[in-house]
Image (cartoon, rainbow, N blue to C red; front, side):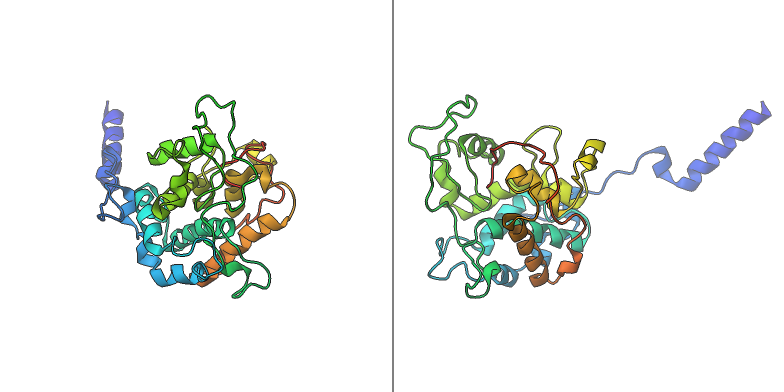
Length: 305
């Protein structure tokens, strides 16, 4: 009997030493920072995007977007990006981890955007990486990107589903999925992505934050470290880092094909933006490319191209 009392005394002593959390899990801290990070959310307790990313940095990253030769003059601006980002900051966009990780995620996301909307070339003024956000739509579509066999997201009469937006969206089924995600009828009105810059950024960030297939990670998750690769992922050379974001977003359109120019261009934009934001390309992180990665979704169709 004395042994049982002694054991109980030891357990009680350990609980007292550990504090109330040992008896009852401490409640997670939640914050609300108003319009930019509308909580309650644990991510709103961190810095928000405007704490480390200002209008002058946006102008530095996209310094040629309003030059007369650009194709979307006056369309893209800092306020549109920040307004769109605010929707996803309570979910972790630009608010996950410490300040460096937060800055790196914004640079990574915008690196994709800059590469996919650039009209820069080798001898362009300011260099080929200064021309992001030159476009807001595909200029000469070769087709209407209507998959007639998709019954869930049937093509709207007269609609064309060519590339539009900050991370250009293609195909009716992708307009349907992303439209549901942002709660806007993009299936029937795909043109909205070339008419409203805030919505175009919002659709792109939704795509960054969400997996397009069950049991697969989002670009956000593979970048910030939320995703833990399976044995099959490791064998397929899919590992956390910037390279895997390209795999999530573009699959075998970009990845698993060696060091092709289209992949290198995205990496170059990311590192260029890290430099301009004061983080530095030396902090790019491990697994920077996807040259040898097998695609998560080996298919010819992708939401972005």
